[in-house]
Image (cartoon, rainbow, N blue to C red; front, side, top):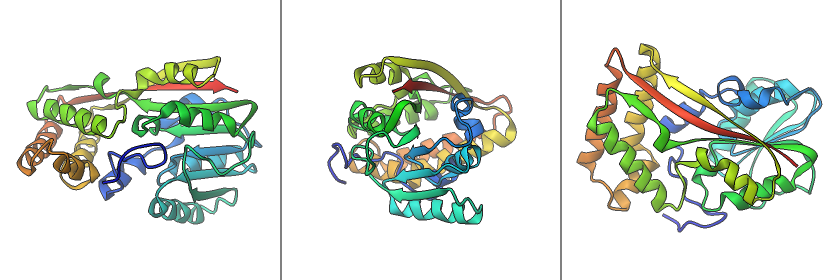
Length: 272
Protein backbone atom coordinates (compact mmCIF):
# COMPACT_ATOMS: atom_id res chain seq x y z
CA UNK A 1 0.00 0.00 0.00
CA UNK A 2 1.45 3.37 -1.00
CA UNK A 3 1.83 6.16 1.51
CA UNK A 4 -0.84 8.81 1.49
CA UNK A 5 -0.29 12.30 0.22
CA UNK A 6 -1.61 14.71 -2.41
CA UNK A 7 -1.82 12.79 -5.65
CA UNK A 8 -1.37 9.30 -4.17
CA UNK A 9 -4.08 9.14 -1.52
CA UNK A 10 -5.21 5.66 -0.52
CA UNK A 11 -8.80 5.01 -1.61
CA UNK A 12 -10.47 3.27 1.31
CA UNK A 13 -13.10 1.55 -0.83
CA UNK A 14 -11.03 0.49 -3.82
CA UNK A 15 -12.67 -0.74 -7.03
CA UNK A 16 -13.98 -4.18 -6.15
CA UNK A 17 -17.16 -5.24 -7.96
CA UNK A 18 -19.18 -4.55 -4.80
CA UNK A 19 -17.99 -0.94 -4.82
CA UNK A 20 -18.71 -0.38 -8.50
CA UNK A 21 -22.10 -2.03 -8.03
CA UNK A 22 -22.92 0.59 -5.42
CA UNK A 23 -21.54 3.52 -7.40
CA UNK A 24 -23.29 2.47 -10.61
CA UNK A 25 -26.66 2.82 -8.83
CA UNK A 26 -26.08 6.55 -8.43
CA UNK A 27 -27.89 9.00 -10.68
CA UNK A 28 -28.09 12.77 -10.85
CA UNK A 29 -31.58 12.52 -9.35
CA UNK A 30 -30.63 10.43 -6.29
CA UNK A 31 -27.14 11.84 -5.75
CA UNK A 32 -26.99 15.40 -7.12
CA UNK A 33 -30.47 16.79 -6.67
CA UNK A 34 -29.09 19.95 -5.04
CA UNK A 35 -27.25 20.77 -8.27
CA UNK A 36 -29.93 20.05 -10.88
CA UNK A 37 -31.60 23.47 -10.72
CA UNK A 38 -28.26 25.04 -11.64
CA UNK A 39 -27.76 22.95 -14.79
CA UNK A 40 -29.02 23.98 -18.22
CA UNK A 41 -28.24 23.23 -21.87
CA UNK A 42 -24.96 24.80 -22.92
CA UNK A 43 -23.17 24.66 -19.55
CA UNK A 44 -19.89 22.73 -19.59
CA UNK A 45 -19.27 20.32 -16.70
CA UNK A 46 -16.21 18.64 -15.20
CA UNK A 47 -17.13 15.70 -12.95
CA UNK A 48 -14.14 14.91 -10.72
CA UNK A 49 -14.02 11.40 -9.29
CA UNK A 50 -16.67 10.30 -11.76
CA UNK A 51 -16.34 6.55 -11.11
CA UNK A 52 -18.47 4.39 -13.41
CA UNK A 53 -20.00 7.55 -14.88
CA UNK A 54 -23.71 7.18 -14.20
CA UNK A 55 -24.09 10.64 -12.64
CA UNK A 56 -21.84 12.11 -15.32
CA UNK A 57 -23.99 10.62 -18.08
CA UNK A 58 -27.08 12.26 -16.59
CA UNK A 59 -25.25 15.59 -16.56
CA UNK A 60 -24.39 15.11 -20.25
CA UNK A 61 -28.07 14.73 -21.11
CA UNK A 62 -29.03 17.79 -19.08
CA UNK A 63 -26.47 20.22 -20.52
CA UNK A 64 -26.19 18.95 -24.13
CA UNK A 65 -24.77 20.05 -26.49
CA UNK A 66 -22.12 21.37 -24.09
CA UNK A 67 -19.16 19.13 -23.29
CA UNK A 68 -19.11 17.05 -20.11
CA UNK A 69 -15.86 15.44 -18.95
CA UNK A 70 -15.62 12.80 -16.26
CA UNK A 71 -12.28 12.36 -14.53
CA UNK A 72 -11.16 9.48 -12.33
CA UNK A 73 -7.74 8.39 -11.15
CA UNK A 74 -8.39 4.72 -12.04
CA UNK A 75 -7.89 3.83 -15.74
CA UNK A 76 -9.94 0.66 -15.14
CA UNK A 77 -12.92 2.69 -13.96
CA UNK A 78 -12.46 5.19 -16.79
CA UNK A 79 -12.74 2.32 -19.27
CA UNK A 80 -15.98 1.21 -17.59
CA UNK A 81 -17.36 4.76 -17.88
CA UNK A 82 -16.31 5.09 -21.52
CA UNK A 83 -18.25 1.93 -22.32
CA UNK A 84 -21.33 3.44 -20.64
CA UNK A 85 -21.01 6.64 -22.70
CA UNK A 86 -20.70 4.63 -25.92
CA UNK A 87 -23.66 2.43 -25.02
CA UNK A 88 -25.84 5.47 -24.32
CA UNK A 89 -24.57 7.29 -27.43
CA UNK A 90 -23.68 10.46 -25.55
CA UNK A 91 -21.49 12.31 -28.03
CA UNK A 92 -20.88 15.24 -25.67
CA UNK A 93 -19.50 13.00 -22.90
CA UNK A 94 -15.90 11.86 -22.47
CA UNK A 95 -13.82 10.38 -19.67
CA UNK A 96 -10.14 10.50 -18.81
CA UNK A 97 -7.76 9.54 -16.02
CA UNK A 98 -6.43 12.37 -13.89
CA UNK A 99 -5.45 13.80 -10.53
CA UNK A 100 -7.79 16.07 -8.58
CA UNK A 101 -4.80 17.96 -7.12
CA UNK A 102 -3.40 18.74 -10.58
CA UNK A 103 -6.24 19.01 -13.08
CA UNK A 104 -4.95 18.96 -16.65
CA UNK A 105 -7.12 21.86 -17.80
CA UNK A 106 -6.51 25.59 -18.23
CA UNK A 107 -7.87 28.13 -15.79
CA UNK A 108 -11.55 29.04 -15.99
CA UNK A 109 -12.60 26.32 -18.46
CA UNK A 110 -15.83 24.90 -16.96
CA UNK A 111 -19.16 26.36 -15.92
CA UNK A 112 -19.65 23.62 -13.31
CA UNK A 113 -17.06 21.52 -11.47
CA UNK A 114 -18.60 18.68 -9.48
CA UNK A 115 -17.34 16.03 -7.05
CA UNK A 116 -19.52 13.40 -5.42
CA UNK A 117 -18.25 11.41 -2.41
CA UNK A 118 -14.66 12.39 -3.22
CA UNK A 119 -13.37 14.83 -0.60
CA UNK A 120 -13.87 12.33 2.23
CA UNK A 121 -11.11 10.16 0.74
CA UNK A 122 -8.48 12.89 0.35
CA UNK A 123 -5.61 13.86 2.61
CA UNK A 124 -5.95 17.51 1.51
CA UNK A 125 -9.55 18.34 0.55
CA UNK A 126 -8.87 22.08 0.73
CA UNK A 127 -6.16 21.80 -1.93
CA UNK A 128 -8.59 19.83 -4.08
CA UNK A 129 -11.26 22.52 -3.72
CA UNK A 130 -8.75 25.21 -4.69
CA UNK A 131 -7.85 23.24 -7.82
CA UNK A 132 -11.53 22.75 -8.67
CA UNK A 133 -12.04 26.48 -8.24
CA UNK A 134 -9.11 27.21 -10.57
CA UNK A 135 -10.71 25.45 -13.52
CA UNK A 136 -14.18 26.94 -12.91
CA UNK A 137 -15.15 30.05 -14.83
CA UNK A 138 -15.82 33.34 -13.00
CA UNK A 139 -19.39 33.13 -11.78
CA UNK A 140 -19.32 29.38 -12.19
CA UNK A 141 -20.09 26.68 -9.65
CA UNK A 142 -18.08 24.21 -7.63
CA UNK A 143 -20.53 21.61 -6.32
CA UNK A 144 -19.55 19.00 -3.74
CA UNK A 145 -21.47 16.30 -1.87
CA UNK A 146 -20.11 13.92 0.78
CA UNK A 147 -21.56 11.53 3.30
CA UNK A 148 -21.02 11.88 7.04
CA UNK A 149 -20.28 8.46 8.55
CA UNK A 150 -20.63 9.28 12.23
CA UNK A 151 -24.02 10.87 11.50
CA UNK A 152 -25.36 7.64 10.00
CA UNK A 153 -28.16 5.99 11.98
CA UNK A 154 -29.57 2.48 11.84
CA UNK A 155 -32.01 0.16 13.51
CA UNK A 156 -31.89 -2.53 14.85
CA UNK A 157 -28.71 -1.52 16.68
CA UNK A 158 -26.69 -4.66 15.96
CA UNK A 159 -23.24 -4.83 17.59
CA UNK A 160 -21.72 -5.98 14.29
CA UNK A 161 -22.75 -2.70 12.64
CA UNK A 162 -21.30 -0.73 15.56
CA UNK A 163 -18.09 -2.68 15.01
CA UNK A 164 -18.28 -1.88 11.28
CA UNK A 165 -18.51 1.85 11.99
CA UNK A 166 -15.55 1.79 14.39
CA UNK A 167 -13.48 -0.20 11.91
CA UNK A 168 -14.38 2.03 8.98
CA UNK A 169 -13.42 5.13 10.95
CA UNK A 170 -10.09 3.56 11.92
CA UNK A 171 -9.22 2.41 8.40
CA UNK A 172 -10.16 5.75 6.81
CA UNK A 173 -8.24 7.75 9.40
CA UNK A 174 -5.22 5.47 8.98
CA UNK A 175 -5.36 6.64 5.35
CA UNK A 176 -5.41 10.25 6.65
CA UNK A 177 -8.89 10.69 5.19
CA UNK A 178 -11.98 12.21 6.82
CA UNK A 179 -15.02 9.87 6.89
CA UNK A 180 -17.16 12.54 8.57
CA UNK A 181 -16.65 14.88 5.62
CA UNK A 182 -20.25 15.99 5.19
CA UNK A 183 -20.23 18.29 8.22
CA UNK A 184 -16.89 19.82 7.16
CA UNK A 185 -17.67 20.87 3.58
CA UNK A 186 -18.61 24.43 4.48
CA UNK A 187 -15.45 24.88 6.55
CA UNK A 188 -13.23 23.39 3.85
CA UNK A 189 -14.78 25.62 1.19
CA UNK A 190 -14.27 28.72 3.34
CA UNK A 191 -10.64 27.76 3.92
CA UNK A 192 -10.22 27.25 0.16
CA UNK A 193 -11.22 30.88 -0.39
CA UNK A 194 -14.87 30.64 -1.38
CA UNK A 195 -17.11 33.37 0.02
CA UNK A 196 -20.40 32.68 -1.81
CA UNK A 197 -21.44 29.25 -0.50
CA UNK A 198 -24.88 27.68 -0.28
CA UNK A 199 -24.88 24.67 2.08
CA UNK A 200 -27.55 21.98 2.13
CA UNK A 201 -28.02 18.36 3.11
CA UNK A 202 -29.93 15.33 1.86
CA UNK A 203 -30.33 11.72 2.95
CA UNK A 204 -30.15 8.28 1.45
CA UNK A 205 -32.57 5.97 3.24
CA UNK A 206 -32.68 2.17 3.05
CA UNK A 207 -35.84 0.92 4.73
CA UNK A 208 -37.82 -1.24 2.30
CA UNK A 209 -37.09 -4.95 1.90
CA UNK A 210 -35.49 -4.38 -1.51
CA UNK A 211 -33.40 -1.44 -0.31
CA UNK A 212 -32.19 -3.33 2.75
CA UNK A 213 -31.17 -6.36 0.72
CA UNK A 214 -29.27 -4.22 -1.77
CA UNK A 215 -27.48 -1.99 0.75
CA UNK A 216 -26.59 -4.82 3.11
CA UNK A 217 -25.43 -6.99 0.21
CA UNK A 218 -23.06 -4.28 -0.99
CA UNK A 219 -21.49 -3.82 2.44
CA UNK A 220 -21.46 -7.51 3.35
CA UNK A 221 -19.34 -8.08 0.25
CA UNK A 222 -17.14 -5.01 0.74
CA UNK A 223 -16.27 -5.95 4.30
CA UNK A 224 -14.68 -9.23 3.22
CA UNK A 225 -13.58 -8.68 -0.38
CA UNK A 226 -12.78 -5.04 -1.20
CA UNK A 227 -9.77 -2.82 -0.62
CA UNK A 228 -11.40 -1.87 2.69
CA UNK A 229 -10.98 -5.48 3.84
CA UNK A 230 -7.41 -5.64 2.56
CA UNK A 231 -6.51 -2.43 4.38
CA UNK A 232 -8.17 -3.50 7.64
CA UNK A 233 -6.07 -6.66 7.59
CA UNK A 234 -2.86 -4.97 6.45
CA UNK A 235 -3.09 -2.26 9.11
CA UNK A 236 -3.75 -4.83 11.85
CA UNK A 237 -7.13 -3.29 12.65
CA UNK A 238 -9.11 -6.51 12.20
CA UNK A 239 -8.60 -10.17 11.48
CA UNK A 240 -10.44 -12.31 8.97
CA UNK A 241 -12.83 -13.72 11.58
CA UNK A 242 -13.87 -10.20 12.62
CA UNK A 243 -14.55 -9.24 9.02
CA UNK A 244 -16.67 -12.34 8.54
CA UNK A 245 -18.68 -11.50 11.67
CA UNK A 246 -19.31 -7.95 10.46
CA UNK A 247 -20.35 -9.24 7.05
CA UNK A 248 -22.79 -11.67 8.67
CA UNK A 249 -24.12 -8.80 10.77
CA UNK A 250 -24.95 -6.83 7.64
CA UNK A 251 -26.86 -9.80 6.23
CA UNK A 252 -28.71 -10.24 9.53
CA UNK A 253 -29.70 -6.55 9.49
CA UNK A 254 -31.10 -7.00 5.98
CA UNK A 255 -33.55 -9.59 7.31
CA UNK A 256 -35.07 -7.25 9.91
CA UNK A 257 -38.54 -6.24 8.67
CA UNK A 258 -38.20 -2.96 10.57
CA UNK A 259 -34.62 -2.32 9.46
CA UNK A 260 -33.66 1.29 8.79
CA UNK A 261 -30.38 2.78 7.60
CA UNK A 262 -30.00 6.54 7.14
CA UNK A 263 -27.02 8.16 5.40
CA UNK A 264 -26.85 11.97 5.70
CA UNK A 265 -24.93 13.89 3.04
CA UNK A 266 -23.52 17.37 3.27
CA UNK A 267 -23.68 19.50 0.11
CA UNK A 268 -22.34 22.86 -1.02
CA UNK A 269 -22.82 25.05 -4.06
CA UNK A 270 -19.82 27.40 -4.08
CA UNK A 271 -19.75 30.29 -6.55
CA UNK A 272 -16.43 31.35 -8.00
